[in-house]
Image 1 (tube, rainbow, N blue to C red):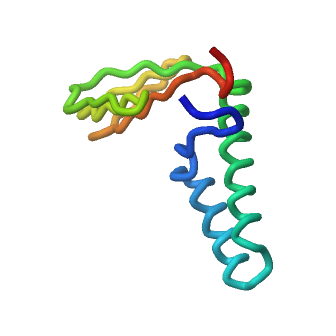
Image 2 (cartoon, one colour):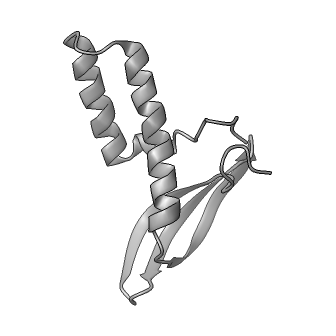
Length: 112
């Protein structure tokens, strides 16, 4: 579990997270912000995206596939699934050759 005030950094690898990091890197290289401010921005991003997804996303997705590998380390499950078929609430279906699922504790920092 993360310490109070800390959130997982999982979404930094998303397209929006990578764009934010690229922009922050440019600002640091141009001398427009200090690295300490960059770390604060990323910390705020981690909290904001986790809170927003928890509060705003209400749709569900089911999937089937072949479990290739799984592991549990530091309270985090990681699953690698092959030949995955997804189905949305609205009945839309799509597939993927390989999917990596990372599952972390859903409680907010400080909750027991």
